[in-house]
Amino acid sequence: MHTETKPNLDTAFKKEVYQGLTSFPKYLSSKFIYDKKGDRLFQDIMALPEYYLTDCEFEILSDHKEAISRFFYGTNSGFDLIELGAGDGKKTKILLKYLVQRDINFTYKPIDISQNAISSLSETLAKEISKLNFEGETGEYFEVLERLKKYNVRKKVIMVLGSNIGNLLHPKAIDFLTQLKNTMHKDDVLFIGFDQKKNPQTILDAYNDDTGVTAAFNKNLLFRINNELGGNFEPDHFKHWEVYDPETGTAKSFLVATKAMNVFIDTLQLNITFKPWETIHTEISQKYNDDIVSWLANEAGLQIETSFSDSKKYYKNYILKK
Ligand code: AVJ
Image (tube, protein in one colour):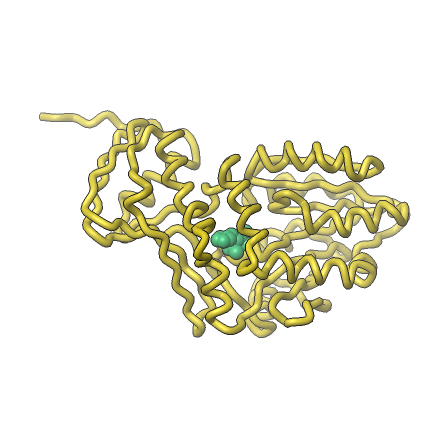
């Protein structure tokens, strides 16, 4: 009898790739897109004219930095500004510069799943805002939440920009917000961005640029499996496909096999077959309105204190409290 040796699934990446590619229908998690190349492709996405999210949030932070900061200020002991999914910090810098210029007592604690992002962020911050106190950390949201509990000496401002929460389905988003709430005290605030429902075409275009940047970003999952897990995916034979459902507000990304294929992933000792036009679901980017945000917040035991919007009303940043 042929006995299979069990592959050693000793990292989240291996475990989840194995899980997702042996499921039906197949899926992979977008959180694994972000290696050095993925980070760069996401920066390219943020610079796309179609990807309105970044510009809208930039506008909100620039126009309302004074009003927003007022919710941050604590007592004399100052506050910790903890950013989940800090990325390249382009938008955050507006607030950081404003706070440092005013000699506000705070420490910036950026956390990101990408070690690469945290390293380059540390470098640019040291250069551009030399008076800033900061301590960066690497990790996934849910594992990092545990560590948040240790920042309990003074007021906490938790910041989640970029509508990053949109990668989570509602039950997971509630879970995430609940866990954030559990780390918060009465005066702590959660400052969080939610991309809003709008013309479905505008949303679809944001995830479907014809320069192919988003396609390359999505396919980076396959490149990472090839490079890090010894896979032999042919990314050229997968097509990036985006759908947006205006009823649920969910944008969904897929990689679609354009022909029958066999793929072998060496470190997982895994053979996968693709039928022609078979899909891998890779990402959701949820869109919201005030009712949905307030429902999610309430489910998690949080309240909307106020919100800030851009002039086109495409995007909103909310101040949530316990
Ligand atoms: C970083 C998760 C907010 O979903 O809009 C951009 C990632 N995916 N284009 C998003 C993304 C495709 C982005 N987030």
